[in-house]
Amino acid sequence: MRKLLITMAIFVFACFMAACGGSEGNKEDEQKNDENNILNDDDAAGEEGETDEEPSPDEEPAAELKYPEVGPSCNKNGTIAHNVIMYDELDNERQLAEWYKENNPKSKLIWLIFSTYDCPPCRVLKEDLLVINKKEYQDAGFSVILVMNGLLEGPEPEKEPAKIANLKEMYTDEYPETGQFALYSYLREQKVFRKYLSSMMGGSYPTSVFIDASTMEILEYMEGWGEGLQGQTENMIEMLLEEL
Image (cartoon, rainbow, N blue to C red):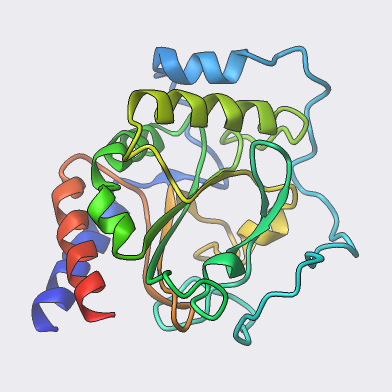
């Protein structure tokens, strides 16, 4: 347990040092060809969506899945992760509760990731995910839930399903095993993400949350990503899967 705590502490510090601003936005122009293709494939599809929608009375999903009681926020270790409502590449409503052990007996460890297409640390993380998400981890109950929250300056809801579909197709075609994330998704309402922000002033991308599927308790909350974290993350995942 001591070894695990030390590893996780080092991991969080390294992530913090490599965070990309989420509220103000990093305006770096670095872009990879595959990310540019995703961003440009559906430029003609509708107007840009609002980045700060008012709460909707229909926020709660129709499906009645079990879920533990949550508090006002969920950005610290030991708190219960809010039941995120998100949408997949077919624009179907999905929810974090689908991976709660009470609803999904095989679920053990969840890695919930909030990312963007144009955040440099996010691009590094997405590449590392294609190595980290090993089939043996998936078989042991590990699930990656990737939430692509548009661009740093805000999401474009009308374009997001097509962009998610392009990203999923690209990754699963090239990486048929490790590219099989439990879910590729996007958010329609930013109030969902705000519950995960590190402060009232905002947070940083990518935001990663490791969750114990049996309780939905946050085991590790972190912001940012950088080179060299792949190995540390794999070690942490292996130890958590053994302990849970």
